[in-house]
Length: 517
Image 1 (cartoon, one colour):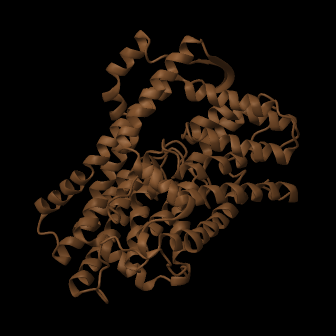
Image 2 (cartoon, one colour):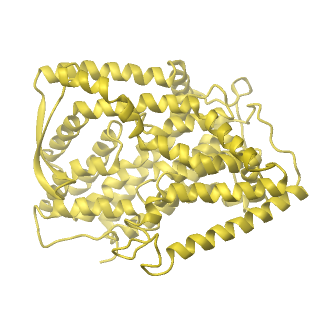
Image 3 (cartoon, helix red, strand yellow):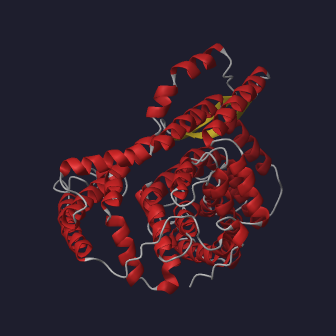
């Protein structure tokens, strides 16, 4: 059960104490777009200074094109040099168009937006509230978020707003629901109860790093499976407790002005809409199954070389568009039967309305896309990451202490270098051989990387979906900003980092297998 809300009536909807200060400071700063424009200015100045000083690093890194570990050099490149100025002038449009978050959001919201505007999502939430066991409702939300990482970005765009709406329908604070969903999707991102395509990529990089020490040794994508499954469940429980025992009570009762649906049950039109949506879902499901389930070549959405559904398949690569298509057909079927959509033209109008509501977010993503592109151009993140890796490599500690320090280093680097695969391509060639020479298991290094990388995702400003969370929060709290989300999620980051690291150290000391032998 959720803890009973006990908020300060003079500050309802906000948090007090340290987190309240974080929220106030965060929301007192300028618009997020202005913040990132200021950050671009800082990056320009820093790149000019360090570029003039000739700052560079040499390291052994994984080259994606060659598929091997090679010696690489990264020098800070100044954005005020002739090449840097040309880059800033010529690249912004390409940076924006190449920023996958933009396309993902727009495509996903074609279907999800129609489903929301037609009333389907609200009706489904009320139905879910009526049938879901109240005592484990929050845990279900978080665990589904954890598992959703198999579907790339779908969890951010589908589950999180659903979680906020579901909490609101229960009379609970919608931002607590947003926090619960976001924690599962992002703070426990690199583990799952299933093996995901990301696991295969991380293992590929790890094996190339292993060959530098022992060419005969290889790890498999299931090498962390036992630890991943246990982490998924244990961290979901911890996120549930943080939500119900700490975050939700601090938020207090919701008084944001968005009324809770007062319906005791579903109307006849809504019941008819759900039945039509169910039939549409069945039809779409049968079509997708016919394209995916049969063995190749009949299963055209399978990987045509391996026959697999997960790694490298059109099904996984096109999951966002498939999810959008499902929501599009199901939402339209619901709207026609429930009377909320008159015809196809009206449905298109609802989609256009949804995209119109994203205008502010799209502008923010334009600024963020160019900040990240400019920052990556300078090589500042790579130089810092390599220097931190060198520091850890020269620190004489025992294995448990190395695990803790490695987790901390990964967490710090995640603030400036968010891509899980990009960071591992830099860190694996350094730390995998180091741990192996100390008698450590390469799977243990990868497990530690999972622990360090995930919890920071919910507070790092370079996570594009942090801005998306602000947009979701503003539906219920108009003055919500980056500070609101950071203050909301900071307890998850701090507690997960500590408890998850202790879990990994304990796992190592007890000698439990990380995965199948």
